[in-house]
Image (tube, rainbow, N blue to C red):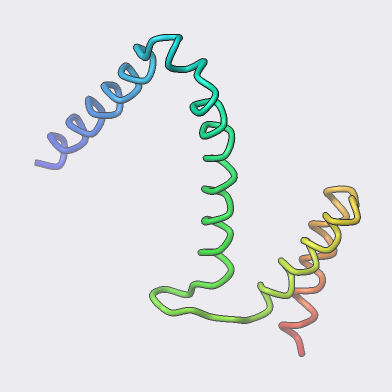
Length: 99
């Protein structure tokens, strides 16, 4: 029974991919389409970060992860290197968790 669901999901994914490839060029070159396509990844990444930072199951939580994200945002604003941002955010979250 589960294999039918796997096959159906595979066919649906293939059909969706095929539908995306068959979009005419004049639709893809429209300025609004280009702007929306550029902003979708930013919105999705922001939503994923918000869910990972503020959610614990079905409830909202404010804990050390928020401090880590805050440190990362501040370091990104001053254009720190990526490894420094990740290390400092992890360190800040770990120190807050220890306290």
